[in-house]
Image 1 (cartoon, one colour):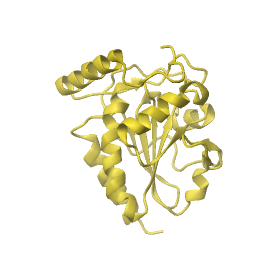
Image 2 (image 1 turned 90 degrees about the horizontal axis):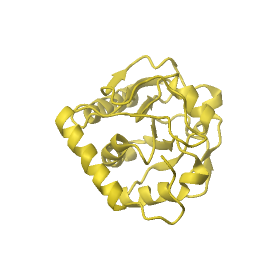
Image 3 (image 1 turned 135 degrees about the vertical axis):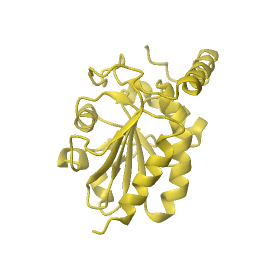
Image 4 (image 1 turned 120 degrees about the horizontal axis):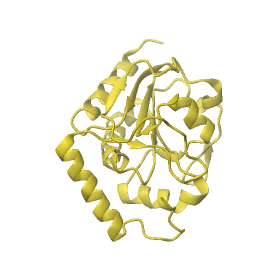
Length: 211
């Protein structure tokens, strides 16, 4: 899929129709995920077919975030840069997504609600797009405004996304990270009935862990 030129409105008629189709499919089948491969240079090769059922697994292939992920400079949509290592000692939710991914658009309002619920308890949330940061900059900023996203939104460098995905390339993916940096739970795909309460419980479990 070609990237939109800078300045193009996010909610075009085609996007509105596409979103309605995705919502209908979710309502009918209750399952939703996208293949993370797209036409940008930042895409991640994957053998995971699109449309796989949302699921969660305790074993993500990683027991904790490696230094290469913690120390990576992450570009944020407001122009700043951050490192996950700067949030050591906090419970983190790291979400891999893309603006073109219908299930990601459906999941975002739920993440916004979860952020409002857990923000005061010290949970930090990061939405990292797998798109090319230069080609998708304006589209991502329009997405943030349209969905009133109030948590950190930026981009996952190719090596960071690849390390986290461990060959499972469907998006969205979410990782719940404990204060000690342990991956408490990994979620692949999104089910509007099942996934939000599971993420909420995983955050509660991470907050309850003793350091």
